[in-house]
Image (cartoon, rainbow, N blue to C red; front, side, top):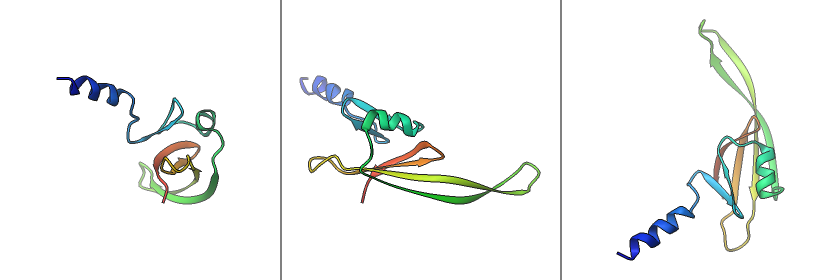
Length: 99
């Protein structure tokens, strides 16, 4: 019986798998670079590239679209895993453990 309340408390303080905890703030998919910088500070490293993707219009015409992909790396020290935040066109697309 006592384990259930403790488990509920632990669940309340864990971040979703697709989120990043910076102090008492959460970073989640869809947030802007500005919002991430406000919550986590400046990244330890960054990289940026542009890719061309092709989409098909309703008239079945191929259209080339250039997208910006930026990766921010955070090193939270030896007690936590490094994180990579991937932005597509300025918004968080994915948060993953950095390799």
